[in-house]
Image (cartoon, rainbow, N blue to C red):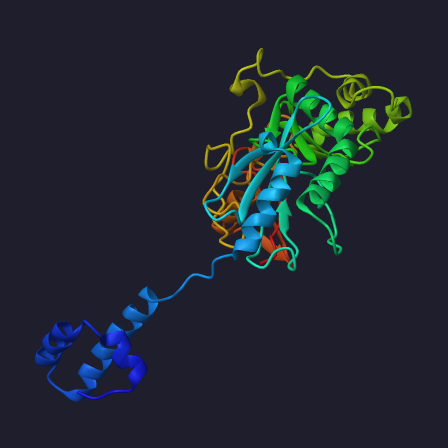
Length: 331
């Protein structure tokens, strides 16, 4: 069999396989398809990885020497994947992940870290890995008070969301008891300022608490921790994990009877992991049952008396038949 030199070189040593396939094929078109599959497999196996040059290894090793090998938390086999550790003033360990191109330093390295804002380290001529880490050290210094505030929130209150807080998370959803909760979003560069607050629960329960926030907001003291301000201004007894049982905050959805729904949106980073928690509640003060928005939408769609106006469904609470409205999520 004759073929072009490139394919003949690829097929060298595979004569027995070709003869076997040729005998099994009933016609020429089927053999051509078989030949294409063989060539594809062989071509994939012959792909040569682009490895860094000796100068790349020499430079990276010199730069790690300058930084200090004790600051290196992980290194990939080809030195293109590095993880550095930085300790802040409170003793927190921060991991900076760095990916290097094979033609580094001509190509700017990619760096990521668990921080509330993206660090713009720039990459000028003459910059090194030590320069990059210096930018991250300065950024970490900016967020010291922010992390102190967030750690105090996690220690003091019953945190419903995020389930496993990261240093990049700027919000906390705090259990208030009685099917209610408060979501606070903190400015990482001004963590002692008044946060953005959003209440979840029945109007009958959260209206008095919201009124206290409005009338007492003048008491907000930036010299105090966020927890101290919330306790004083809201003037309520917060449920605590070490004192109250899960049933005391009653946050399971009244329809699916679970607390957290799995995230089934493949476009989200959390796809396949645990997702939303109940974010709607019946406004009847004697009921106040919490629901996942998605569960409530599905429930209302099965009831013939439910009506829809634009993207809002108007129906009834599954438990007490009190009027409820739920907004459809945009696709």
